[in-house]
Image (cartoon, rainbow, N blue to C red):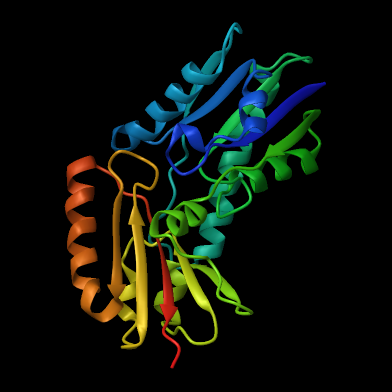
Length: 253
C-alpha cells in the first residue's frame, strides 16, 4: 500500500531534525513540495538542503506543485480556510494517486511540527477519510518555533504551576489581554502585540529562528513594540518574507 509521511523539520536549522526524522527520510521515494512563490524560495531551498544532507545512497524524486491561492482578507475567515483546505486536499489526493505506485512512499516536509498550526495533517486526514485513494500515513514530530524561541531566549515556556495559551495574531488583536496565562503568538502578520497596552507585560520575540538570519529581541512590550515592528518590516523587505513568533508574559507583583 502507498505510504505518506508528514515529517517535522524544525524551525529552520537543519540540525533540528530528530534521529527519527532522519531515518524517515531514508524511506521516501517522492517528496511533495508546494511552491509558494519567489518570495519564499529560501524555504524551498532549505528543504532541498535537508534532503541532500541526510539522504545517502538512495534515489528519490522531488515533485513541485503550485500552492492554491487563498483569500488573505476574508469576511468569513473559517469558511475561507475550509475552502483553501479543500483545494489542497484535491491537489494532494491527485499527487498521492498519480505520483506514487502501490508500494512507494511519499512525504511532505513540514515546518516545525505537523501538529501545531500547520494544515498538512488536517488535509491528509481529510483525504484518508474520503477513501478515494488507499494509503497509510504517519506523522514524525519536529521541533517547533515555540521550542526554538524559548531556547534562544534561555527561558522556560511555562512558569511553575501556570498555564500557557497558544494563539494567533488574529485572535490576540480581538482579545489583547495577558492575564492568567503566558501567551505564545503564531501567524501574526500584523504585529498584533501593538494592541496590548499593559505596562506589566514583557515580550520575547524571534524571527527566522534557527537560521543564519535569526533576530531576537526581548523586553518591556510597550517600550519595545515600535522597535520590533520596524525591525520586522525591514527584515521582510530585505529577505522577501518573514516568519516570527513571540511570547507575552505578565510580570508578577
